[in-house]
Length: 138
Image: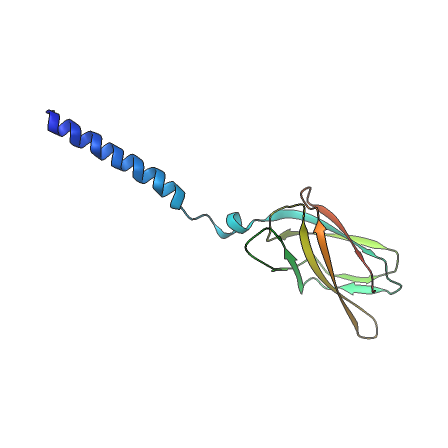
């Protein structure tokens, strides 16, 4: 190999190395890696109303205030029916946000007689994948 060939090999190696470094910065991660997932998250619902309530599995929202994704739809691991006043029940699900210390939840529930309620919970610490949401109707 003569001197000119050595320079070309070195230049090619540097270009490939630079392209690899730049390419790694430009790589696109899967959506769940960017927006986050909190897998196997347990939510303990406490009924602090004077009513027997039903919490459907669908129709709720979750948000990481520090994230870019805004409110995400949330489906619970199952519906909770006829939860008596003073009782509690837990469900498990995967959330489409990271496990953070300031999560927000929007929960919808109903009582007999067609009464519907929406309650927003802020600053819920879910880093340990557990939280308790106490439902009130006031």
